[in-house]
Amino acid sequence: MTKLNRQILEMMQNSKGHMTAEEAFLLAKRKNIDVSLASMYRILNRLTEDGLLTKVSMDGQPDVFDKTVREHGHLVCDVCGEIVDFEIGNIKEIINEEVNEDIKTIDLKLHYVCAKCRKKGV
Ligand SMILES: [Zn+2]
Ligand SMILES: [Zn+2]
Image (cartoon, rainbow, N blue to C red; front, side, top):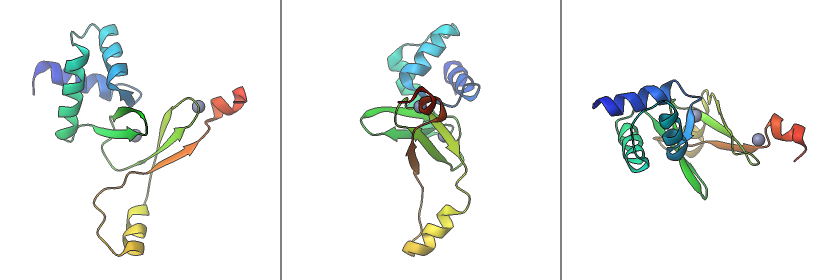
């Protein structure tokens, strides 16, 4: 792995966890990591291919890169877009049994309005 890729990976691992390439690019700038937005896209996708990050596809929005690689679900606030992880426990086994197939991966997104947005009364 190149030094730059490692720096980006470490930055992601020390972050809140879910970031678009653009957010990661802005964070890198603040940390004086010298990388272009195009390179950031390339590096994040590469790290995802290598299984070091995961990617969450969002409807009509840029992909979000995730530092958590073990299987988990996401709570997505429909107002501010904030993403929170939750454990999926044995959901996969339950679904496997239900459909009687061998599910490879699970992409579970639950939509809600987060506490902050509820407080603002949106
Ligand atoms: Zn919210
Ligand atoms: Zn996550």
